[in-house]
Length: 126
Image (cartoon, rainbow, N blue to C red):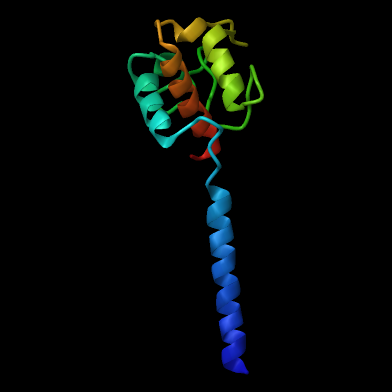
């Protein structure tokens, strides 16, 4: 009887770990891949110049750009689609700073989608 209880406890513990791990991994939005996120990080930290206002880690720069790593979104609901829209159109920050369309550089549509995927991942743990 003791062996059965021990096996049941072990099975329950494994189930909890597997469930927790699955919940920790956010499902990627439709059309987003891990490769897009990796490409977006390079754009964010390089040619896209996003880091200049949002910081290399995406945690924001006071009086310039918002923290992109938390769950608070100033200009949208934080969904991938709305982030793409904000990057495309630009935004007026609460600080008075302006994010120009596409962050300023002439990014292609694919680059906008990639950097948006990376920004989405910052607050979604992917």
